[in-house]
Image 1 (tube, rainbow, N blue to C red):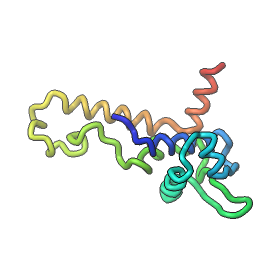
Image 2: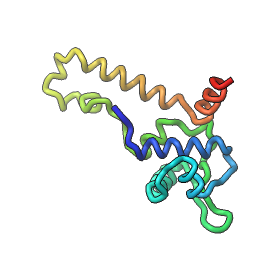
Image 3: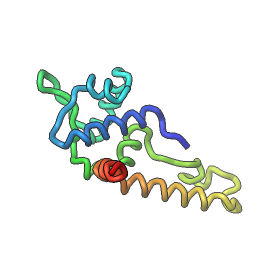
Image 4: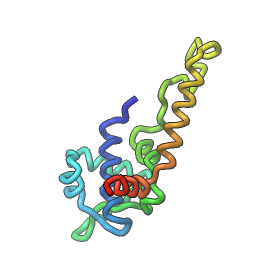
Length: 139
């Protein structure tokens, strides 16, 4: 499984804003430049994250993009799902009826457990925690 490039860019943009702090704004051009995200692609991502309630945008000379909530309140899961939708490792995890082998499949419970572990990890990881863990590993 691999998240989309769009979700990766969204995570990078939110992480950039989280490192700046909750009260700071950045121009999309600055985010695009520093995170190496194509500006037109970033505009679409910012729009989706704004609709999801994760970012705020404002126009004008003092405008820009900022976090809608503190980095302690935004999780990796929220950002990925705002862009890619719900995460499923295999279609049988979301609907066992899709697989004609689901009743006797020895792998189905493994897919379900792996998905639950992934979802829990992403849900428990806030941007504040990710930034803190990265800083601690550099010490």
